[in-house]
Image 1 (cartoon, rainbow, N blue to C red):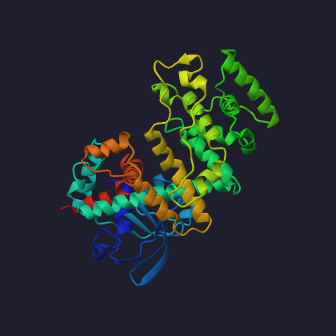
Image 2: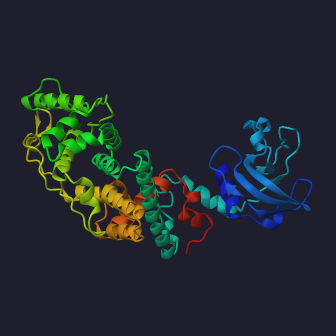
Length: 422
């Protein structure tokens, strides 16, 4: 038995309500179970419980064994004094508040089939716990949950944009530039690119205009990736960066976490920085290029070429075996999904456009689905992923629920635990 499973049963009332009694045979009636507390303190807050003839308002604490109350030192923590009911699987002792008063306890009746279904799901070695059973559900139930996952991911991304905007004190330009930088990390180097973007003053980026060489100098220098006295190109970058660094009082990063190992050269951070410099040079009106025009129109240019050095190099003094391919359709697609569409929707929403979220969803539905390790897992289960909205939904489902075995908070998992398959 696990405590989170008991919390799940309590939250959704999945127990026979007419079989709740205290050890002294007082009838217990749940008027309101309370709100699940995800922070420190009792498990459910502001519950209303009838015990015998008295109605109590307070908190509920849930444990597998009653003695866990003492093992967790709740008896010495005043935050647990407002607990009016102790819900357990095994009542092996009486528990008391800090003042010595006893707390009423009930043993929660657990339906054996629920527990068996839960253990069956968690015992699988599959990366998706319900791999062998989720198809037993009605297709409409699964479809509705997948759509909810897509909307949940959109909400999470919009929260990230607005949080970044708040940190930038309402600066949309700074926020957009930082999202561009983060997105060019394309997964494994996202955090390092994010750190890089936040370390460069927006005034330094604005000052470059379409000067691609100066952008390369700023980005490579600030990223701590410029080699010492290698070739003429890197030496020129060093000189240019020294000038810009002094002008804008920049402090170069010290190993922000660049990753090169077990990566294709086309994904090296050096290549991505060269591409990022080209993108910024090709889109000097960066904010207007993504905010002007109707909801589905963007003026972004992805075909601005990298500089001549990076057409033949994937790292300093290391040349490509063949020809550098530049931006591919899949790369552009990922950039649209992870940067352009969330930013545009948040910008429009904050500026009073009531159709911003609908436009965002429509744009996702018009883009091809992502092709990555996680989407391939779902396709292996024969689930069709028709567009980017659905690929985002399946990413959300896997990363937030399946990977961490959060079946108790997953709608599909809840149905399976309750045995509601076909």
